[in-house]
Every structure is written in structure tokens, then in C-alpha cells.
Image (tube, rainbow, N blue to C red; front, side):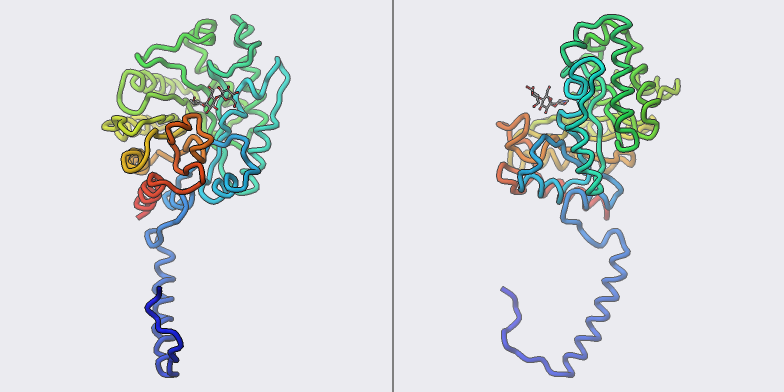
Length: 343
Ligand code: G2I
């Protein structure tokens, strides 16, 4: 209902007064338009852009489902393939590359002016079977060739690459993966140097989970990044996956991001999802978003999916849109936190 009464005519004098007043309003609006604080954006990507950040989503092959695609188009300014750029997908047999899924996503993103994160060049999981049995120098050459070919294929199109994923245990020790056991401690820097040669422009990230505060695992990664920076190993960013629950302890979350940022790298929230619902879930999303926007070098947030119904944690309803693509309470919390960063 509007307060305007129907059928009421306006006199000429009143109309000119309205015109003068309206032009004053327009002038004020024009001034406000140039102020970055004036307008609250009404999409996640738009709100994040006001403070120079992206807001992204992991994408599985549901492009073609109308609501999925329209939600992705409207809300998100960055995409990452949930699975399509992993080693098992891109090099199913030795030296035979399949870029179809990744190429489709990159083309989609470029047509719409969205950023692309690359995920992931080297990981202990989702390796094709043929890699799992390799030893010694054969594994080293396979890893280098994989990075060179995949990062080379997408060179110039990827904003940030997760070069190495999940190489540490919760106690801060190195995960005893085939890479660690066969190649020793040097394999991570080897991967970063190889990626740098293949795509000199992408930001090169180390990405992990369980690093949602200051703890033994994030301490170990911190020391690695500090060492890489000191020795000139090319690392540009650290990804904090942030697979969370409604009761996650976030008391040192921002402080943890800040200490990494103080090493001179960017930090990014890379796989955010929060099990739960309602206010408790929204509150965790709000805290994570507020932490990122409080850290100057936190340049973007990615949620690990668009809709609860396709989430890897679907039963926990961890995302910002429900199965019917309706905005959840958590959506409003994230949007408000992004908008308040801009003001
Ligand atoms: O596990 C959650 C994420 C943890 N951080 C790294 C991410 O890359 C990881 O993503 C998940 C995907 O969301 C899942 O979709 O990685 C899983 C694999 O560890 C993905 O699951 C796999 C299934 O296990 C396979 O059975 C399936 O063939 O997805 C594959 C493709 O649909």
C-alpha cells in the first residue's frame, strides 16, 4: 500500500515546486552516487565489490538448471570448479589431458566477467589411480608435468590457483601422503616453483581446512609461508577452507587471517560452508565475513556450492540458498556484513 491517494490531481504550482525539489533530490542523489558509502548493494558479488573483494561459489555441473544458473549469475562474482580441475578429472591417464569441464566453466565465467579460482593442482585425494602407484623421481616428474600442463593451459585466466591442497595434519606435521613419502619435504616448494613458471600471473595459494584459528596446524602452515617468503619461494596467498559448524570456535579466526596477511600474502576464504540453520548458522557466516572484511589483504570469499541440495554436506544444509534457491537467514547476514565493510 502506498500513502498516495488515487485520482488526486496536482496543481501546476505544486508541480513546479515538486520539480525544483526533485532536482534538488536528484543533485543530492548524484553526489551520493559518487560516494562509495551511499548504496547498499543487493547481491553478494556487488556488495563485496564495493570494498574491492570478490564473492564466489564452487560450481558443479548444474549449469543448465535455470534456477541454479540464474542464482549463480546474479549473486556471485567468482567461480571455482568443485571437482572438474582436479588431477583425476584433468589427467585420467598419463599425459592424456581432459580440460572439458574446466574449459566450460572458464568460458562461462569469462563471458560474464567473473573471476575464476583454480582448484587444485596437487592434492593427496582425487589423484588418478596411475599416480598413486608412482615412486621417486617418476612421481616428481609426473607432478611437475601435471602442474605445467594444467596451469599452462589456463594461464592468464585464473585469478588464484590452489597449488597445493591439504598437506598438513591437525598436529602440524606433514600429512604422510604419497607425495610426502616419495618426495620429502621439498615437494611443496617444488610445486609452487613449477606453477610460477607455468602461469606467472596467477596468485599461487596454499589451501587447507581446520585452520580456522590459531592452532597447531595453522602455526605449521604459518611457519612454512614465512620460510617461503624469506627464501623467495613464490607463494602469494593462503586459502582457509572454513568448513564450519554453527558452534565453531571463531575466537581467533580474524587474528589468524591477520597474522598471515602480515607476512605479505593475500588470504582468502575458499570453501566456506556452515552446518546448521537459522540464527546460529547466520551468526557464524556473519563472523567469517566480518573477519575477512576487517583484514585488508583478505580479498575474497568463496562458498562451497550454490544451493543446499547439491552440497557435499547436503543433510547439514550448510549454504546460503536452500534447495528451492531461496535466500536463507545466513544470506542476509553475509550481505549486511559485506555492505557494512563498504561504509
Ligand atoms: O571434501 C570437501 C572439500 C574439502 N576440500 C577440498 C575440496 O576439493 C573438497 O571438495 C569435495 C567435493 O565437494 C566433492 O564433490 O571433494 C570431494 C572428493 O574428496 C568431492 O566428492 C567426490 C566424490 O567423493 C566422488 O565419489 C565423485 O565422483 O565428487 C566426485 C565427483 O562428483
